[in-house]
Length: 372
Image 1 (cartoon, rainbow, N blue to C red):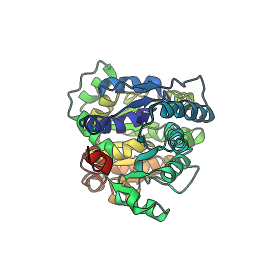
Image 2 (image 1 turned 135 degrees about the vertical axis):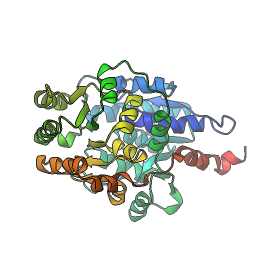
Image 3 (image 1 turned 180 degrees about the vertical axis):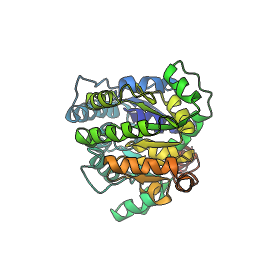
Image 4 (image 1 turned 90 degrees about the vertical axis):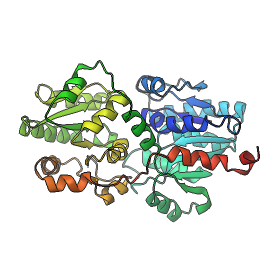
């Protein structure tokens, strides 16, 4: 039983679901959609041709974390008691994943955690994801780590080595596959940006810890950069629907000719923007992973990252939310060819696009499966 509820979860689990489904004699795959990000998930289900077997339909206006947790825990536990799967597979660190892992624990169902071992070491950054991922790893019977660094983290926390498999990250499987697809979009702003001969800078910023003054500082830096490089660069910012993001972004960045603000974009559009981008400015975890697959430098709008591999490899740099730091780092990537080349010419630290196959092989090699 594979459960997902948010846009990143669908992206990272879709290639795994498709790979597992290639072995119908050995593996019976069921899926469940929690509904945590209903509007943002619908286009992805169409893109990856996924149809969930179960839907929890838990969305409420202005839903809090406690509502998501209790609703997933109650409803998904009921599904597990009825379906009685051998395994529950969750991904990452969302509230859906954490509550689903708890359901698996309560029903004594084995738990597989895709992208295990992510850590910042700070329970407030990101919030609540850091706590979620710690809980999930503690409960999991199989931890599918995306890197040796993540494996070392799990071992340090006492997870037995027998429970850990280093597989790479399934997001590389997804973004490479989607990046190979032809792009047909009717979004005029996107087509205009892709056709623009100026360098493209892709921006995303939405995390809870950046709401308030940090978001204002980010917007101030972005506005300064757009004006500074109006002849040489075009900036595109798909703006998260959260009002805490929408208000400062549209207030401070609207009306700048080379700053293109859009609604959240479908994944295939985003994949092509990553390929086209000169560099990326983001607080997103997913983009920190996806950008290196295309050799794109990343400036991380956070104080810490649970993906130290990209920083250690040199493809990403933590700049936080300080206006001056953001401007200085982006200026370096625009004006210093040596700095740009050092960040762009780095091998992807998250694998070669075969993570889904490696995870599937784990299940195929289980004694009760291989004997079939």
